[in-house]
Image 1 (cartoon, helix red, strand yellow):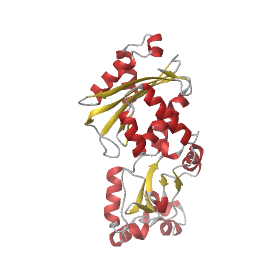
Image 2 (tube, rainbow, N blue to C red):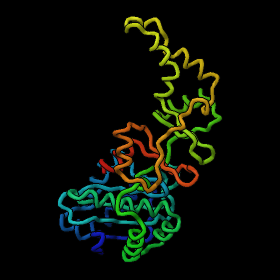
Image 3 (cartoon, rainbow, N blue to C red):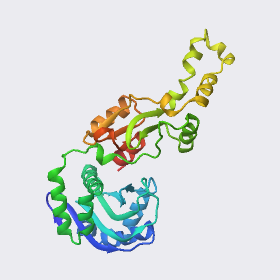
Image 4 (cartoon, one colour):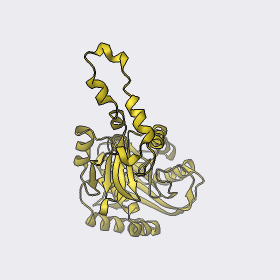
Length: 305
């Protein structure tokens, strides 16, 4: 059905079984091809699937909290098209938070109006982060029920895209008591430029790769009279001396950039692009870490919709 406030063509499949993402995408594309806006464009399920995989191959669309959201932008499409389903069994695939996929939504977005797709995705992500809304979503068996749920959500949510719509789980977290040598090894293994330091679930600091280099480099550069003397000094001599004897708490930065989950998109973009913060932390009460945002995630969720 089409619902004017959202301008979405819906198809809700109450239960669907799939062995893997490929089978799920095939089934969702088959249902999507029956939606009127896509039928007007003579798009077959095969053509829809090709567009979905082109986007999926750029980066997987498992978003965490049990949600997989394959999507693509379609030229000349008159409205958003969404096919949603609760899976009979959790999907066997990698997820950013290791939570099994239990809900799938295939979204086709008008090429000329990408912000409509972004807003829909933000609403859906908000549902999956809220246990009460998530249970209601999984129990929806018709388009009418889905529309009613989204109406309620939009009454309670800010009109703009906010931090909680974009954030993802941290790939890695360190404890204050962890030996620095182990922390740097983990950062190298995960290719992490910045990592949160957690005391339980409370954010107490961060380790930034650039700061680790500065453990030895300031003294090194203060000795230089000209660049020609560079061969006589080892900038990492002091670093290795510090690393062997230190814990994460000894060198972590406690002046990290943290925002509430209601922070606006422009605040996040400013912190990343202008203030050059490698990692933005989204926190709740008592500095509980809720999620993180970095440049790659921002590009993935916003610019590369």
